[in-house]
Length: 145
Length: 304
Image 1 (cartoon, rainbow over the protein chains, first blue to last red):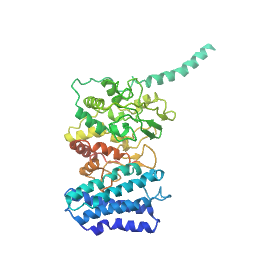
Image 2: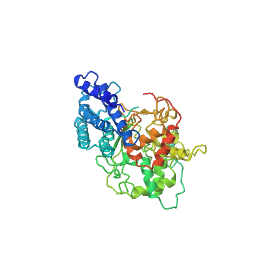
Image 3: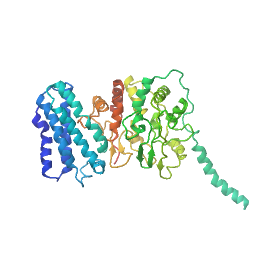
Image 4: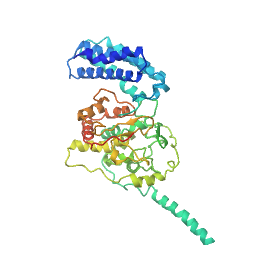
């Protein structure tokens, strides 16, 4: 598995995000797509659909931690609409709750990331790390096709 | 002069009388059904509870127990706000109900007091449930914790606040057709059809509705504006290029099990709550639902 291409988009988006808010909606989408790619890689290893690779496993969790840091900065006022964003109005009406989700997620992932040494420990860590997805999307994303 | 007055009064009274007759809860629905004598199967009742998504609307908000059915959720709609009632086995809920009351509510949308329910309670789908499954579901709900909590009246705009008007709506839109099995299809496909069209009531959100709030057949399962308002748009779940064309049965199965799409996006909005129900279903039932969904006739996505 080629990790550098797998996560390149996510890392590039995170670096770019700090520099400019010009296309912040596209940036936050890129970050989440990177999270999706990481989740796909992690799921395939956990299910035995791809060989376990320790470095990839650690990168999956590192991608989550990086996303949890950059994501709360990618929803400035004025980006509530446009660019086919699926961001829910609750992100702006409940900013504190939204930011807390990412802080809790980061704490969860950081708490298990250090213990990853093999497939078994990664499987446990991955389960903890991916628990946040659904609850956060339920509150802070609108439904759309 | 007196004759004229009588004619005027009659002219005014006749339409009112016709409205009264047509909207009478006794006039609509499928009539009495034979109730099964056999003992209820609580395990099957739980499957029906999860397939039916009862918890998604009726669980009390702001607390964690999905089996606390005190209601209280405010459901916004183009017609106003519906306040979800208590369905726990408490006097404030359905504690005093008999099985025939429950069957009538689920199949005809009529309360034990003989009032029409608004179709925000999806009896338009639940009406296709087998009476044995309704018996088991009723017994399962009765086995849960009774919780106090009186509901609030719905806050709807005129004319939607005229509850008798639902009688007319039912005459026009509540089809009296039972769901006939398709002998040309597999047993699991037919199980999926039953679950999707009946208890799981997928069409209620995944279809566009007309001015009267009824599902338009040409957009059944083809998505539509979020009935709860906002910018949201419920996706087309038919295998059309504007929907889920290219999805395998396994992809739908994955979504119903873990909430992940083939792109490993985790479903959000109210579908997150749906997955909290479907992840609890027996694997064979999830597979049946997936088999049926990917076999739906392809339809172009409803306009935005």
